[in-house]
Amino acid sequence: MSEARASIRDLPPSAKLVYFVLEHHDRMTQQELAAETMLPDRTVRHALDRLESVDSIDREISFRDARQSLYSLTRSNTQPGDVSGGLEDTDTRVS
Image 1: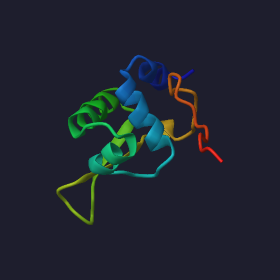
Image 2: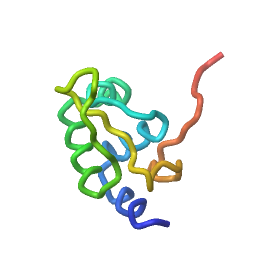
Image 3: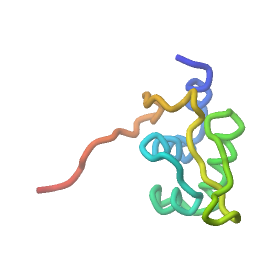
Image 4: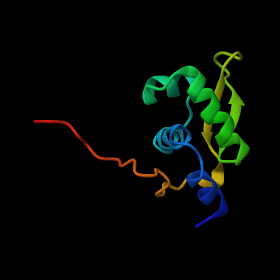
């Protein structure tokens, strides 16, 4: 297991959830992440800060709106892996 993946395992559940969502989307804004995860903006901001501190995500300025940043996984973390800490990618729809 890479050192980056090990450090993600030590993060709080909110940061793991944000990481999990970014595994399945190219780039997202903080607002998009908040909507997708149903976490408060402040919690998402804190999760993004924690993920940046362990070099798991990249931040870039949005060309559409320079007031917003776009977040994506770092190149070394673009391969999906089991860092979800119990989060599973399952379809829970009821027929």
